[in-house]
Amino acid sequence: MVRSPAIAAGWARADKARRTISVFGATGSVGRSTADVIQQHGDAFAVEVVTAQSRVDELAEMAVRLGARLAVIGDPERYEALRERLAGTGIDVAAGPAAIIEAASRPVDLVVAAIVGAAGLEPTLAAIEAGADIVLANKECLVCAGALFNRRAAAANVRILPADSEHNAIFQSLEAANVGAIERITVTASGGPFRTATLEEMRRATPAQALKHPRWSMGPKISIDSATLMNKGLELIEAHHLFGIESARLDVLVHPQSVVHGFVTYADGSTVAQLGAADMRIPISHCLSWPKRVAIATPRLDLATVGTLTFEKPDLERFPALSIARHALESGDWATNIVNAANEIAVEAFLAGAIEFLEIAATVEAVLERAVATVGGTEFATVDTVLALDAEGRRLAGELIEFRGRRAS
Image (cartoon, rainbow, N blue to C red; front, side, top):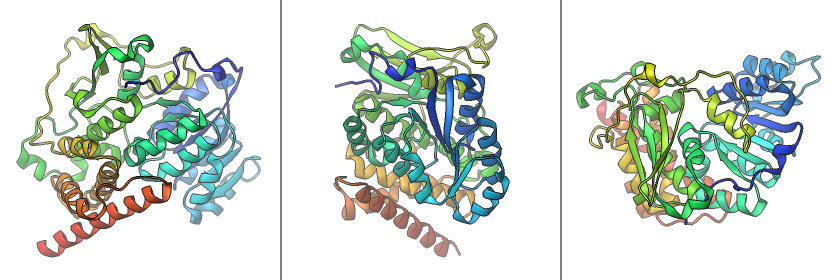
């Protein structure tokens, strides 16, 4: 059964004159875009918390600019630096992973979940337990623990509003009265920096080349995922959990212009799509103001200038990460958790020069194969189980990368 991540009847909190909001992962690309949207509609939001992992100066500047009540730095060794930067501002300061989770428990209307990677799971679940609706920009929450995450959200009666451009496009294209008539959901991919590269060129690719995305400005991890197309594999998994639709009815198309971000095909043959400029402020604004729409200063799409929109099927030989992620989706949450964990370690290794570009997907696939015998079929009853499996995926990936390094030397 297909379902929307938000209730079609509307959102009572949207009627509040001023909504309270916390931004987790505030100094990343999504967090900065969120801050810009908030500033454009300052009277509509009161900022409770902003967090970052290590960027003290950027976090302090954003806390002051947004008038936040609390700023939390994930790295406890940077507490004093943040305290000094915010001395005299009246903004409270805290540090460490436990402080981030505690901050997520503060009562607010909206939490923007933009912490990168599996580290975002516990704070987002804490925000759900506190009753906040979630603007979800952390796909790993659903990739690592989709069923558990959805159970917690349903029990707390909170809404999950997708901020990723692709899932937000699908959300905008859903017709509440016709969710049962959905035939197919398609997310689009720019193709990344290696869309037309040969396998040999990809094998020799440097981190600098892989980080050079042709359309979007993103952080290092997400940029590498875009280069391998693992990001699209993770988005298929996320779409499954957001919209309740099985793998066979989920698709990816490469669309280099990044104008059509996603579309829904219905049983009568109609296809409804969302188009827009490649600017994260558009889907973020949609989530923050939903179910209303408000004016936002973003580039307007000029189709006459764009001229041509092209689409092509992804090349699964050059981009095997898509097939790996789909196989994991069809195997269950334990497998998607392992794939996500192994991918994070492999991306780190590539950026550090420890493995080649094509070895990212190869490492993930090898880890998944090994994990079948040890943790295959594990069901998630608690967050501890999720985190234990994540740790196992990281351990296996680390061992494999270390072994390859010894063999190469």
